[in-house]
Image (tube, rainbow, N blue to C red; front, side, top):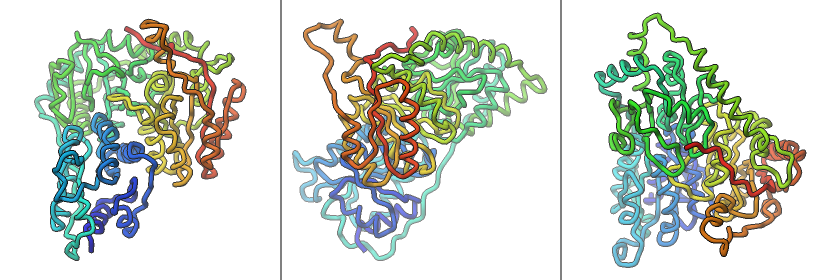
Length: 544
């Protein structure tokens, strides 16, 4: 047995059924021999994004795995690992390293040295006998505490070295920790005595599969719920107490309720201030529940804190709230009615764009028709950076858990394609879609060919306005000498050239029929790219 085969055997025992990779990496063939599906991508970042989605959609139970060659392959992968680290996603990264005798000689790229600040766990494999120990440490870290990437560098001169015939390895366990009971009591007191509580739910609710306990707490307190971008779909957005998602763009009720609240309860979130999420008000009584104490008092000052798994925290908190409320059931109708009125008034302001018959097409019309054509209980959607993110988040009601892959700690263009492909690998019975723009497809569009070649039938929604429209106001303020980059192209033709289905749509009446044709193609096993020619829209639902 070779080291590569021992690594593949460990992956198999840990429940890994898919290895995503970019050659050359000898672990690929070993994985195939172990009956692990191998998916070969055109660039490293897409492969990492695919592994990212696979981990998220399993709520952290399954680990996404990506392997790549040493040197340039490992260098190219940095952005994808950094994205997963920022978004707290457990993926196993297996770069090949330079042979051990030159691994530390400048300028040879050493992954252990260079990825240290974007990984949760990082370690080189130094001898064949250490495969099980090194792999066990990595999987334990990924399955314990705050999720994040783990990296194991496998030297090129070791991957085909002899390994002891027997792999002595027992799959690792998933750990959970609960909050201090006293902290739970204090938080329950604050919530029960609050006049206008608001719950802010983050990605930790997904990892804990704590959707029902969150819903129960909201209804028990008559407390409205908003989510972070990565927490979107943790609370059904068609629920009467749902405010929507608190991103850079948001519905009016999100802003109003956050700023009119007296107690803000963050569960499974970091409360990190970013350029792409909602800016939290600073004058509220804050209860912060997070898995990682490093998040406390980082950007938001908390009066109460609970450290632990979001599910265990919500279960304990529900019990404490029940003890305090007894048979009393707060009347949620006034809050629900107020939310409904606020949403109605806000949507009425946006209806001209959401239902516009103008050409070029309104991107809002495309997204509105998409949301009302697909079966949102049987689909998974993700956005890309920039305009697609800001345009879809407020107007797409995610109604089932893990039906929306939201992100926004960092903002790499082209992230959404890999997420959609990974989502389809993880949940092949779902319609998996990415919404992106012409800037994003310029970064990762070649990997649409990967979807065709590897038989991953996603639906890709491209909003093409032949520019980076989100930058236009900035350009005009700075100078008119320079303009937003002209990035025109015929991407529907590109999709067809790759062997997929491509269609360019220019007329409003053709939006829904084209979406239906695209869905039909995916159901027949063909990836589809619908290219909608849109206006240079840069109006966003932002409140200050």
